[in-house]
Length: 218
Ligand SMILES: C[S@@+](CC[C@H](N)C(=O)[O-])C[C@H]1O[C@@H](n2cnc3c(N)ncnc32)[C@H](O)[C@@H]1O
Image (spheres, rainbow, N blue to C red):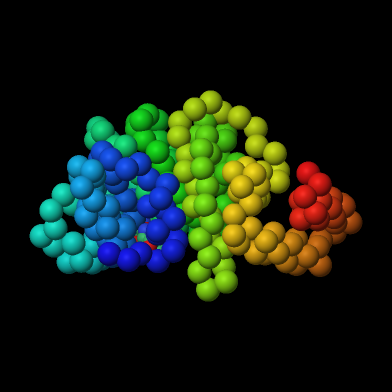
């Protein structure tokens, strides 16, 4: 089964074997693909509301190794021995709220695909002791989508530029990283236009840091 690049990158970050979960599985495409793999023992696919859950049920009817659960975030999976948990296609703050229960899955790799507010997500991960162990960039329709892999560790401080660009992406500079830099620069330019004097100085400092990053000076 061929996946869109965003989901393909997420698959690369998930463990190769064990029990997996896809939270907010939508039409179940990612979960169905995981269930096709020989070393994946079982896949839980979850949805929250009535209608999305019914949609998921009809998309996944009769599939082996796939178990559907209805409920909020990780809650319906407490007690399951999960090796990999995908939380994809949601906002960064929704993902963080779901990860409030991450400590219940101490051996899991969490693969996270924020559609917006990736910086808030990275900052929140560091505060909760979820360490970013890998990160990829998928490019779809000229838009960069970060995919983050995190595991439980120690809470830490994240440098502002690491939150915005991702500590692993800053190091590996994958294809599409220039797109991410340009996108963030546009965002800062837009913020600058509406800013008061105090905020302006702060944003100009962020622009200077970003320009240094573009030149490779940091
Ligand atoms: C945009 S879709 C993404 C579907 C799929 N994960 C993907 O990335 O293509 C977001 C899905 O997350 C579900 N969702 C949102 N909040 C949730 C929560 N707290 N628990 C479970 N599912 C949730 C929504 O019902 C929706 O189907």
